[in-house]
Structure formats: C-alpha cells, structure tokens
Image (cartoon, rainbow, N blue to C red):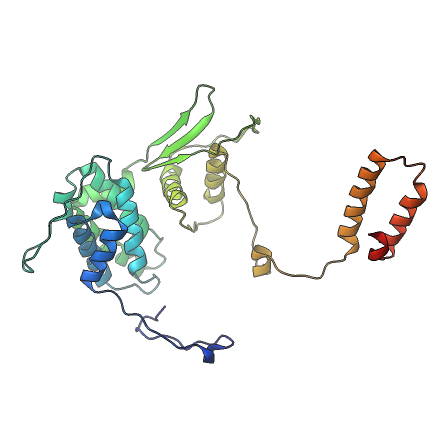
Length: 322
C-alpha cells in the first residue's frame, strides 16, 4: 500500500532483491464501472454510477490525521452491503448515459423507498465513518463524511441525526415448534443459528438488557454475515465482551476468547514449532495402549510385557517400545 503522499516504501524482507516492483494504477472510471457491474449485477447501471459518485465525494475530502484512507476496498464493501439490502422485487435500471454533460440520476430517484435509503445510510456509516473519532479533527471529518453521504441519499439533517442517534435496531428471534432458536434477525441482517443433531441442554445465561447494545449487535451481525473482521474498542465494562458472548449463546456458535498482553507472540495465535519432551506424548500413548491391551488380553499373564513397555518408555527407548 502506498503512503499518504503516494510513494511506496522500499521492501526490506529477505530476498527482496530477487523481486521486481510492479505498480498497478487505479482503474479508470469506465473500468471501475465495468468491474462493479460484473461484480454486483443487481446494481448494474444507474445505481453503480450513483454509488461511484458518492464514493468519489467522500474520497475527495481526503483522510483525517487519525483515520485510514478511503479506497477501492471501502467501495467494494459498500456495494456488497447495498446489494444485500435490495428486495427480491428490485430490478436494476440499466440505462446508459452517453451524453457526458447529462447528470446521473440521484440515489433518491433510484431508491425511492425512504426506509431503504436509511438502511443504506447505516451501511455507509459502518463502512466510511463508523470508527470512533479520537480527536476533534477526526470527529469533524466524520461529520463531513456523514453530511455528504446524507446529501447523496436525499436525507434531511433532522432525519440524518435521527437515523444515527435515535433509530432503534429491530431484534427478533425465530424459533421452531419446540421453542429452539433457529435464527436471529437483528437490524438489517438475518443470521441463522448453528443446527445441532443432538439436543444438548445449554447452561442458563445471564439476563441481557437490550437497549443500546442492539445497535452494536446489528453492526456485529452484519460483519459476521459478510465474513468481515470487526474491532470493538471502548473502556472496560462497556459491554464489548458481553454483547459477543450473548450473540454466541443465542446462535449456538463457538466462541474463542483469547486474553492478549504485551507478552503475546504471533505463535500463540497461529501456532509454531517448539521443542517438546517426547516422554509426555509417549506416556499418554502408552497409557492408551495399556488400557486397550488390558481390555483385550489378560493383565496377569502379560504382566512382564507391560513392565517392559513402561520401562522402555521411561528410558526413551522408542524402537524397543514400538
């Protein structure tokens, strides 16, 4: 990735001199439209043009000091989220605009449903300005992005403020005839629960108050359904872990919790090769073998054999033990 001034840092990894640097230029507007039309067929035509205009307007603001640059990755994520919001009855307006002076149709004309445009605005929030602002300049920059996107979507200032602060995400649990949760609909996303062949009684979970966490749950569920990584930040006790734990319990999804510190290494997460005392797995394998052997043959008649096996494992004489 290039730096903020557009230059690329020199590679420093081992063997870098054997590689040749090839810089791929960003696609032109025509190429970008062709890519999006083929990647997202339900947005083909005017919808793609309107989304590109929105993205260019946000990108024209430039990045703030503490925020990440907005690039093609954000555009792709936004198109993916908008496409999944479209109802099954929607038909793309594939109209070519040959006159370069003709203005593309606004998003409010392409998507006249105000509720749909509100949902699109929330998706744009998660993609373009959903990260928490840590400085005054970053907060002002996020407000500018929010205003530009709202203008493109045809949302008035009062309606924009209501969508961002006062709109409550819907939360509904779908259950079968036995009362078992089979799916959860949170906000704009439907996420199925993990189906199990055996009915396992789950431990009772703590009560969970569904107020402001519903908004956070909606963001988390959307990211999970799209296989996107998500980073939750906040002070201790603000409910980051409890929200994830509650969602995992409802949907019967496995949850792996890792406590990280300044001593955590990459091998603790990805794994690696470390020296292992062969006697430890050897002792486990020996015990499993002796249990199986004792259940098949007479221990009293083969007592000497078992003693020799234990002695070979203890002295690390593996060939003799095998």
